[in-house]
Amino acid sequence: MKYMLLIYDEEQAWSKLSENERQQIYKEYGQLSGELKAAGQFVTGSQLHPTSAATSVRVRDGKGIVTDGPFAETREQLGGYFLIEAKDLDEATAIAARIPSARMGTIEVRPLVEAATPATA
Amino acid sequence: MFPLRYGTFAAVMPQPSETLEQVFREEYGRIIATLIRLSGSFDLAEEALQEAFTSAVANWERDGTPGNPGAWLTTVAHRKLLDAVRREKTRSDKQPELEYETERLQPYVELALFEEAVEYPDDRLQLIFTCCHPSLSREAQVALTLRTLGGLTTAEIARAFLLPESTLAQRLVRAKNKIRIARIPYEVPPLKVLQERLASVQSVIYLIFNESYSATAGNSLTRKDLSAEAIRLGRVLCRLMPNEPENSGLLALMLLHDSRRDARVNDRGELVILEEQDRSRWDREEIAEGLRLVEQALRLRRVGPLQLQAAIAAVHAEAQAPDETDWRQIVALYEELMRISPSPIVALNQAAAVAMSEGFEQGLVLIEKAGASGKLENYYLFHAARADLLRRLNRLPEAAMAYSRAAALTTNQVEQQYVRRRLSEVTKPNGHLPDMSS
Image (cartoon, rainbow over all chains, first blue to last red; front, side):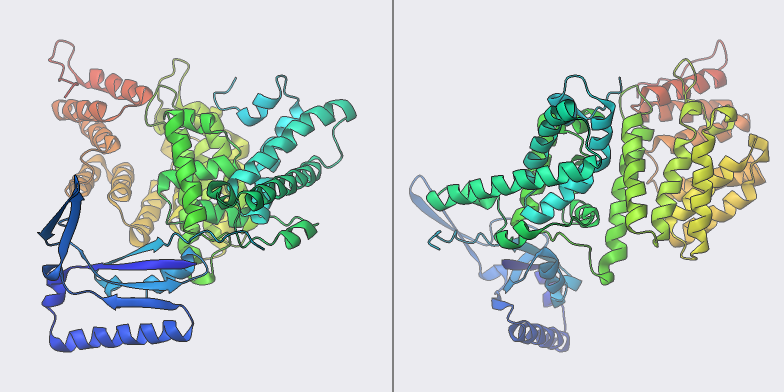
């Protein structure tokens, strides 16, 4: 079963970290990815550029509207994600708790809608 | 008739026989837990058990009650479940586009394994932990626990919590969907998180009890059926996990509070505070069991907040008269409670105990201190307790202010009556009555 782990944290807090601290966190992220890969639970994952690089797109009445920034103004922003394989919610939340940003921000755990397999057995 | 009846049962049988209703109460949770484990579906399990009860009504009437009614029901419900699963499988094989129907079956349930099941271990512990999983809201946890482990109908739960039935039904559907979609596990949590999860289970049961003990709205202070259900769940938890002292603490706490139920309200339906209760109306059996459980729990030497609260209730229960209460011990227990699980409400209770053991002045100082954070500002009992001390210190105008604040904060009519009676006592006969509507 696939779960998306959406990593929310405060961009401002991140930008205030020293280069050393950031490198430390990157290292932890690297370790976690390595462990998940070794366990066969890593599907994909990435850090995202800050919301200052984000663009929102909406189509209303057939017309596309492109605007600056993310859709909602919130304290925490989506900063990255992991797509993982886990047997149940407890396993997924346990992995979420290992994400370094969980100590400062919030990890939202969302199960993926898996396409129904045709019953051809 | 009690407001909370086992309506699933009542619905299938117009003239309930003692046995079947009893069996229903006792066995519902255990059988449903097994059926959920087998099918992975709350809905299919509920339907199968409902059908089994319907069969029981017809069969037992004709052939008499079987020797082991629980086993009879389990076997029949298991068979009904198998039929239902086969039906759903056939339907989904024929029409794979019927996604909704196929979704009701957990893909990981191996049908073969499930047909071989011949023994039925007690699965209720898994069920409790699933129902009280932290990823469900507290309201959903309560509703789901009462629905599945207690076998209460949606209508009964809605009535007990004074909510529209549709709200409750929706709450249950959402919770069951979340369990299925997010795949909340059906298992006893691993040791690492067990204590934390168990605390969540205990909170849910205690919440059900508290809802019955002091209904937050409406005019019936005691909702006997809900408290009986909470106590029953507490007993189940103790039986399933006998070496967890907080489980015994929880059961003891509920029993000791429940023992005062009849004395808490007088013949006119008015609230009677602990100090003024007729102690001969306390339920001696519940007290004896509660005291035994507290002792048993404390002997395991892993003290927790529920055991301490039960111990406090036990000290009250042991006093033959109010002035025989060992307030020093109660203060000491509150101190310990403040140490391991501090909260403004514990601080408030501690202050009230200090008032009784060391004097009203000292108690009032501590109450003001507990209220300083502002967190108790909207808590009816804070103002009522403060008012009581002011009254005893003969500071009547201040007491009147505090009583009227308390009256404005409680929606329970029985509690309101009590506060208003006190208010009229502290207000001079020709004096101005403070505005209570604000």
